[in-house]
Structures are given as C-alpha cells and as structure tokens.
Length: 301
Image 1: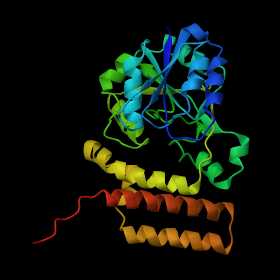
Image 2 (image 1 turned 45 degrees about the vertical axis):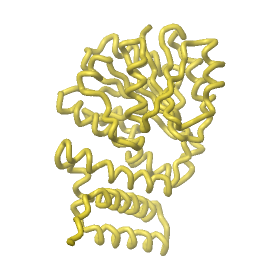
Image 3 (image 1 turned 30 degrees about the vertical axis):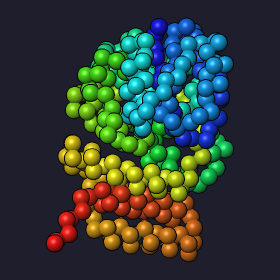
C-alpha cells in the first residue's frame, strides 16, 4: 500500500458523500491507498457512507474519546498501514490526481520532505465578499494559494492537505494534543519543521475544492480561539513576530481601530473599506482571545 489518507472529522455541515465519492474517482489505483476516517464525536452521519465506500476501496473509521484535530490525526497515523501519511480535511473535495500527486512526489523526494496541496473555494462560494477576501488575502490557511507557485514560503504547513513519511512525523513529535480546537496545532507543528530544517513543497496537482460556507461570525470565533491557543505556542516557542504586533498593542487601541474600520465601511463600503473592516475585526478577536488566556491575578485577601 502506497499511502494512508487520514481524515479527521470536524463538526462541518458539508456533504461528506461528495468527499468520499471524489476519493473513489482517483487516478491512483484503489488498492494503492487506504482512507482512515477518525471521529472524536464530531459527526454521526458518516458510518453508512463509509460502509458503501468500503465495497470499492479500503476505508475504515476509528472512534476516539479525545477531542480536537490533533488527537484525531495522531490516532489516524497510529492506525495507518502505510509509511506515507496524507493528512486531509473533511471538507476538502480532492481532484482526481490528488492521491497520485502525493505518492509520486514522495517516490522522488527524500524522507525529510513534506508535500502540500492547495485548496480553493468553488466559484459560487467566492461570490461572498468575505470568503473571497479571506482566500485571496492568504488569511484562510496562512498562504494565498493562487500565488503559491510563484512565491512559496519555505516551511509553510497546514494539515488540510499535506503528506509526509511516518518516520518524519514521529521524529518531530506528532501533533500537540493539548490544542483542544481544530486550529493552531498545525502552525505549531510548522515551527518544529522549520527548526529541524525540513522543507515543504507545493504540489499543484494535489488540488482540492474547499466546501465550507465560512462566515465572518464563524471566523471571528476562530480568531478568538486562535488567540487563546497562541499563548501555548508562544510559551513553547517564544515570541512569534506575526502575532506580537497584535497582542503587544494595548487592547483598547485594537478595539478603537476595529470600531473606526466599521464606521468607515458603513459610511461608504468599497473593497478597500470592507477588507480593512474584516482585518480589524479578526485582529480584535485574536487579541481578545490572547488576553483572555492570560493568567488572572490572585485577589488579595
């Protein structure tokens, strides 16, 4: 078996049948890879779908008691039969060449290499101004995939569409299961990759459709949780420059900046004022999450 595809289930509302069907349509032979779906209680609607898919290709689900994406992906690696692990998000619909692209890359790459595939909203989802800005700005995954072929940041990693050898994963220490939410665990892992000198490589043929109707309200909550998780990352790895500009500013300044951006957009909305509003609201949520996670002073008796 050439690859084990690990899919950690999240509480998404996407049609998981479409995701499974896309794996059945891969150009890689069905016998060359397996699919391991890991459920930590996030979804209860997939068992029958997996049974149908298992008649055609190796696919199984494992249940875990732990919560969070990190724990689910670690469990998936533990159950994998292949030495090549392909981590995939459960709302990513793979193109037909995705699995083969990951397998072919690792046939020629060294053991200390990571393959990364892009994900894009469908045109219909991009009609929403917030989703379009979120994807094009690179804030959705930490990179603007539309520009990735021309400007690939060495060491970039996300767990939505990534592959590596099991030996490298174990060497780096697996994902940190202390991250309760389905975020930041992959960013923290990327810091370990960089410090070990591991290169990541862009695989354009491992493309996915991202079927998730992300809203501004949902993303604000994600940013708040990211701020909370950022404290754990900073405690382990030290000051993170891209975050410090947010949490080192007085919180009331960040609040005022967000209010000004909202007011300016309300007076006359343009692409520029909307982008400034979106960015400032996400900055505020992140800063609030970071400061909320600070240890509180003990009251004097």
